[in-house]
Length: 219
Image (cartoon, rainbow, N blue to C red; front, side, top):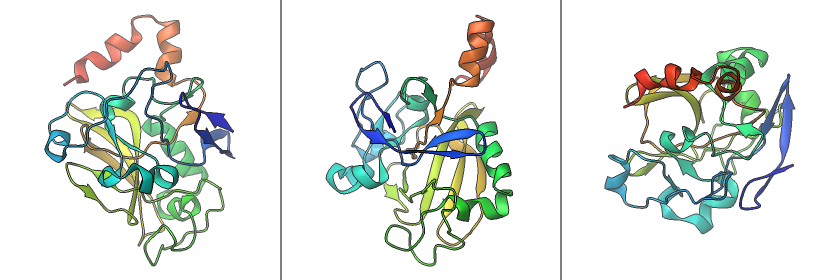
């Protein structure tokens, strides 16, 4: 298991050469102990351009323990969201996972929790043979949408001035949708991957790497 800064415990699962959290991140604190801003106002989510998190429908008691929190990409981009020694995967790391599981057309079912306790019917192709136990926590783009229908996970990879990559699983497909151009202010689920982020490793080797690599894409 691994613990976040609040003491929440997460089981882990090894898939190929990667070690993943087996549940969605639920922390309200960065790994340095500082708080992540909570944004509950629907209209603020559509314009918020600094780090934030929320609970689906602002109902912490109902959704936290099972589905975790929803984070905007600005929180992801702090590099402090996951526990120390873990990171939000970049899109290539997600694609490594998908490839290991046989490609986009079948990987989703191998990642999704089985049954219809949390997923809406028919939960196509779900076997959870990986133990990843993907859960459909929905998303927030102002209002909250698609609880039980969509599991959407941020990557750390920015794809445009106001967008980043993610991956998406649905109740009616057994595959994975490799998404790009998701608005940075949208709230999605987060899964953490063990190890240092690749850009952090390069930053230590090449001190100017992070600035040079990310500055042109900043909003």
